[in-house]
Image (cartoon, rainbow, N blue to C red; front, side):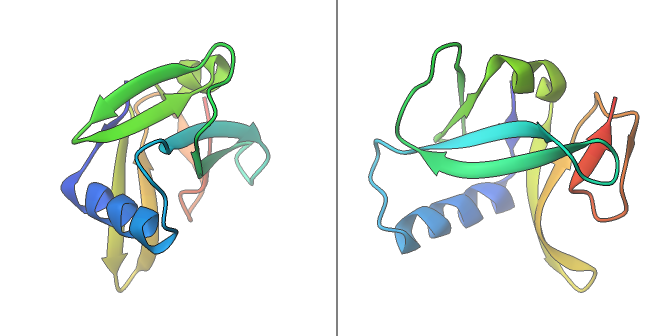
Length: 108
């Protein structure tokens, strides 16, 4: 399961409104090979279910993960930061053994 902070929910809602997306869309969270630590996080909006998708809902946000990503991201908290040290989504992933300085990639 992935959980979402209040700040992340607010930003996701704002992005969906700006893109004029309706309730049929959900947040797709995935992991792809690459980045300076070996694996990188990916966020996107989607409205098509894929075979093997795992669905969760937190704070009214529907989240989809493919099975591979679920194995790497189980228990992760998605947050949003807009401070002086950077702006964007942050993944608090208990499965990551290390992550890069920018927080966009990790390894297990």
